[in-house]
Amino acid sequence: MVALKPSERQPLVRQLKINDGKKVKPTRRVWIPKPGRDEKRPLGIPTIYDRALQGLVKMALEPEWEAVFEANSCGFRPGRGCHDAIAAIFSSITLKAKWVLDADIAKCFDRIDHTALLEKLNNSSPIRRKVREWLKAGVMDRNAYQPTYAGTPQGGVISPLLANIALHGMETEIRKIVPAKTAKQRELGVVRYADDFVIMHKDRKVVEQAKEVIGKWLAGIGRELKPEKTRMTHTMEGNEPGFDFLGFNIRQYRVGKHRGGKTGKEFKILIKPSNKTIKTHKEKLKAVVDNHKAAPQAALISKLNPIIRGWCNYNRTVVSKEIFGELDTYLWEVG
Image (cartoon, rainbow, N blue to C red; front, side, top):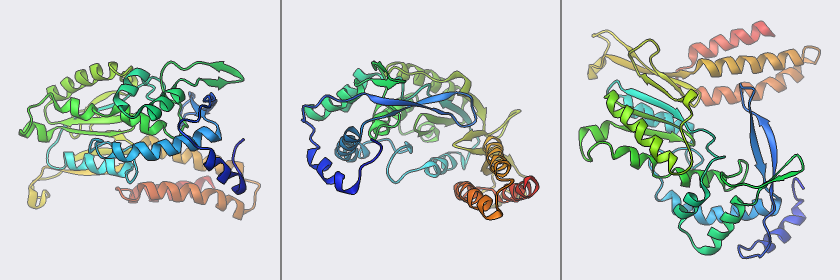
């Protein structure tokens, strides 16, 4: 069943109980392509009853954890989003140029250690028991049952919250490498969005030490850094200054001594859409145009408008004027 009719929803609500005694059914695995890559990621879809019950448990757990989650954790949280993470990065590098560790956790959802997660959950036995049942329920992949020994199913209502709970404490662990209440403590910036995070500090040795610390901490919860997506860079110096995060390129540009303004800073920060996202957006526009060459103009416009509107809304808060103009010209040429 994909969805319920309105008349069927109220009876389902009356059936929802944590101690229902029902055996949790396996999730249905669907493989979906990763954007811009040939790889596919597994999406686990629970039954309608389990999705509704997960929503109920999430409503009980989320307020408790929202009160203790770390300040710069922005992914999968109510009232927070990608732009909050970018604003936190801007605040961290606004006064000084810094070294940055741009890292990604390998297979974040798929390798969560169940024992470590349940210990950290530290909740009443009925909720904890039900969460354990969902974690151990297994998956149906192409009509074949597979048990699950680690991870949470991507696609479950409660999975993003469980992932954040598993990663809670990462920022606190990183900040232990510098003494508290010192200038170095304040200069150390940590911003995380789901499984992507950046660590920023003016001293490269501190960032390298943070990388070692976070590697050991992740091993304790059954995860590791993804080598191909882990990069050390500088916000202003080097052959490739700046870094990409959540579809934006963040970089400091040098300015002349008479252009530093009242602050006298030797740089200005420009946040732009990254080259990779621009390329992906162009490919998407071209694919829509190519698929509608014989279609009426109104049909083509109706397909393009949501794509253009969504991309522009996401990038309108950063330095995008020139890029918007370039994309306008590109769309005219491919059309």
